[in-house]
Structure formats: C-alpha cells, structure tokens
Length: 158
Length: 312
Image (tube, rainbow over all chains, first blue to last red; front, side, top):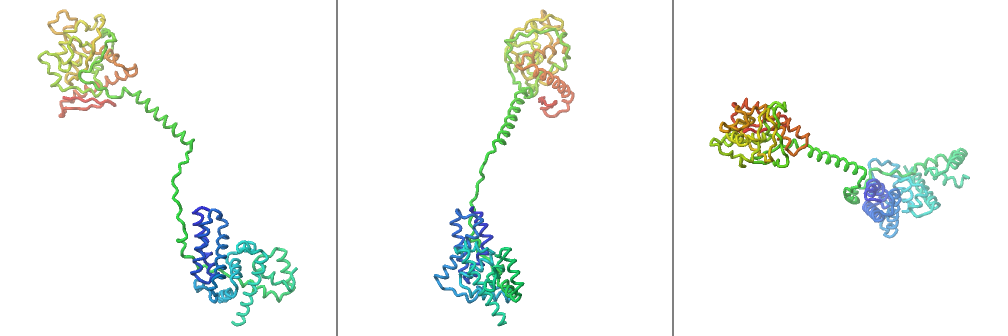
C-alpha cells in the first residue's frame, strides 16, 4: 500500500472506524485511541496490506483493541451511550436500541455493529473477529434475541 | 427444515439477509403456516443498529502521512528523441549550408591599401568593343559597405604626388579598373601616364598585363563617376591612351569583368557581384543627384539588401 492509498483509507474509513469504536468502547477518548492505534498498525503493516483489505484489517485491529482493552482494564461500563452518539435526530427507537446495545457483552456488541454498521457477512465477521462462522451465527442470534426482548419489554413499558 | 423450535434462527438470518433463496422460500411457507409469528419477524427486522452519520472523526489530519515528493523522472522516449535529433541536425546542416552559400551576401569590406594579388593570373585587356556592357553600369566596382574616403582625403593630390591611399609605388599599380578607381584624378592621370603601355584604348590589340597586385582604396564619392575616365597626360607622346582619354564605355566593361574575375569567387557569386555593382552604380547616380540636399556628411544608401555608405 502506498502512502497515497493509506491516506485514502484515512479519509474514507476513519469515520466508520470511529463510530464503531465509539459504540464498542462507549467513550470518545477511547475511541480516538482505538482509531489512532488502528491506523498506526495499518501504517506499519502497509507493505503487507492491500488497500482492498484495509477496511477489514482496520476493523480487526479496532475490534481486538476494543474488546481486549475492555477485558483487561474493565474500566468501562456501557450504561450510557457515548455523547457523540447522541444527536437530535435520534428517535425513541434508536435510543432504545442504544440502551439495548449496552446490555450486550462487548463481543456481541461488536458483532452486531459489524453486521449492522458495516454490513459484513457472517464469514467476513468471522475473519475480523477470529471466530468461526458458526460462532458468529450463534453469537449474533443471541444478541438479536436480547435486543428484541429489550425492545419488546420497552414497548410494554412505553 | 424450519420448525417451531428453530424458526427464530431463520428469522434472525432473514433479518440479516443471510438466508439462501430456498431457505427464504421455506421461511415464507413456514410463516404462512404460522401467521402469528409475522409480528416477531417485524421485531427482528427493527432490531437493527443504524449508524449515526453525525459521528465523524475530527482528527484525520493527525493520521495523514506526508506523501513523498516525487521528482520528475525522465523516461526517455527514444523514438521521439531520435526524431528531434534528426530535425535538429537538418536545421543545423541547412543553416551551415546557407551560411556558406551566402558569402556573397556578406558585406565586402575593402580597406584602404588592400591588395589583391593577381600574380598568378595574367589578365589580358581586351578591346572595349568586345564587351558591349554599358560603362555606366559597370563602372562603380565598389562593393557594398565600401567606405568611400572623404573627399578631403582622397583629393589631396594636387601636388601630383602619389595618392595617400595608394602607398604602393605607381609602377606596381596595375591598370585594372580597381587601380584606376583607387586613384584620384591627379594620381590617376599620373598612373595612366606611367602605365600607358599596358593600357589599351578601344580598338587596340590586346596585350598581356603583367602580374601586379591590385590596390583597392577608398574613393571619394565626388570622383566616383570619373573613375573610368582615364586621360593621358600631355607629356606622354608615345602613350597609347587617346588624347581625349578613355571613355566610360571603352574602359569600364572590360575592367569590371577582369576585376570580378580575379576575385576568389565562383562564377555564380561573380555574377551576383556584377549585379550588385550595377545596383550600386545606379544608387550612386541617385545619390549624386540628391547629395546637394544632404546635410550630413555621411549617407547610407540601401539598394536592395546592399548598403552603401557615402561620405562627403
């Protein structure tokens, strides 16, 4: 990957990576760190990573950093979505989903985000997360069920 | 096979777009058989995260790496270069040939006391009648840019001494028209008197002219038209020169031809030189007509591409 291609990746992928990191970490500062570290690794590995694979590579690095950091530091509790994720356009459904997302563990949350935000298929998510296809399928099924139950319960409350 | 126990898995996969076509068809059939599960399918379809486009990463500049400045790498296109080199060579050769071929266009600077060595060429003066060229056109043999000496310098020969512009003894002065032109009236008369044995008037037999250097000197414009007229002095009874002197028609044409022939030029250039001489002669006539109105002491006459500087 040339420098120009790397800079293109920065311009095209940094926003999506930051949104993913924000949802995974629940903290904008941590999300910045994740993005910085992810692109730093990409820069170091630019000789081995093609531009077409750069997106998956970045999300893989970001996923590992976010999930691993959460597991190691245990400093983060996803009680509230990060501030930057809240906008006036957010609807009630979106707010409920954000709260439902906070109910998930970090791995399930990352899988849901990779699926919904980036539209990866199961096998692609498996490559990013290092899981196999069946694991991705099962984890996502569980996560969807949790989100559905939360949404249904909230509808009963509302 | 979709059953009541595993239908949720298919509902999730349907919401994620992961079902195969035949699985989609099986799910459709299953939902037709269990319509109360349609609402559950709608809920799964709603439980999808939508990215918030308002969240952007504002520190992209810190990630941008400076691109190395690429210098201009010269990748030679040999075919183009060879064509360019060929064109350049043709141009250079053309310029060189033109420069060599246009020597006649170069101004002929005749310095005072310039000597043309004619030792190797015996010139035979032929009767003027053999050359029908009009004398008034061949007389001014001065080439372009011939600086005609001021009259005060050229006519300072009242004491019948040798012309200051002809430092060579008169005995060495050939009777070629150039030699005649380079003398003033007095000195020319003296020259003619001393060399009348080699100068033949019209109608006389041709004689061999001894090889003597030809001196070209500046001639005053006032004397320019008088040059061909060579009158023999009265004290030369044996002179072959007619008493009334040479007429322009008698002396000039042959003289012009011989002088031009002695130049180290090819025939073509000599022909051009003749043309130039005629043009200059024509210009001299014009200048003579208007010189009385000229206040400046120098006058530049441009005839075609030639330039004649006259000093009065």
